[in-house]
Structures are given as C-alpha cells and as structure tokens.
Length: 223
Image (cartoon, helix red, strand yellow):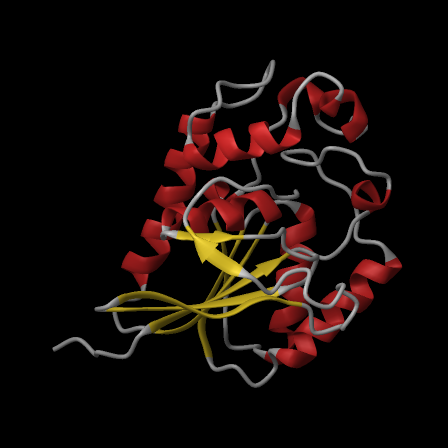
C-alpha cells in the first residue's frame, strides 16, 4: 500500500555564473560559478542541510551539477541523478552572446511568454517552445513517477526551466528566480501548493522582488 505522504519539491536555481555577470545568454552553453556564486550556493546548502531528501535530480550542465553537489555535501547518502530534459531553453546561435544582441531584435517579454506557453517558434539553431515544453513536462513527470512514496526531492535546474515547470503546474510567478534560490512546492491529492517562492538564503535578493505568486499566465525568466 502506497504512502499518502506528499511529494515536496525543493526547486533550486544554479548559483551565479560568469555569463550571468557578463549578461550573456546561457542556455545549453555553460560557464563557471563565480566566487559570489559559490558563496550563494553555500548559503543555500547550509539552509537545506537538515532537509531529509529522498532523492536529488539535476540538469547535466556544469553550473547545476556543481550547485547540486555542494548542497549534497550534507546529504552523503543521497545520489544525484542527471536528466537531460532538465536543461535550460536553447538559445541556438545566440548562445554565449550578449543578451542585448537578442533583445535588439526580439522582445524578451514576448519571447519568454511564448517559451513558457509553448507558442514560440525557435531561434536559429535552437529549439521551439513546444519542444521545450514537452521535455520539461517529461522531466518532472519522470521525477514524480520515480517517487510514489513522496518525501522531499531536490531538483537543481535553470531559471526559465523552473519557471516553465511552475507555469505547467498552474502557478505563474510574478518575478524571476534569484541565483541559488529555493522554491518549495508540495504536491498532493488536492494539487500543488507553493510553500515558499524564490527564497534566497544568502539574503542578497532585493526584498520583495521574488515573493509574489499569481494565477497562471505569461511571464519572464532568466537562464
């Protein structure tokens, strides 16, 4: 007989990276965590040290794996599973280029809204919103199916991917997610409850910037 214990998702965005500092598009490409990024990740690791995780999942990108491994230092018995479908949205030929080059020809609000609702076509060499939506849904579906007994599950991924997942759950955050932030969602028979959104344990996020959650609809995000 299966447990009725809810599945509690600890959704963590990776720590701040060099490309974040340089305001470059960072989807499938990667860059190292900065010193400040590591400091934020370590604050998050300390904040989650006592959470009884039953599993941990991550995008295979270096920045997410590094973040996840630091958090799991306090959880040596929890293995890390990497899932390609947890990767960030692909910016195609614009990967690693300054964001301003893309925003000069595409409205970022419209792009991210289309990505999150699946209506956006694709950037040259990139993936469509529909393809992206499908793989994000697959990833979180696999995680949920793997833990029918419930419990606390760590998922380390990317800004747009985590916001897309929340949108698919019928939740539309009004803001983006800070680096190394924690969003806690409880899933049960009655649906999905946001316990905490965009919490930055380092205390560096602007107060109130990432605290409002509203009904589902289009919004922005970061990578």
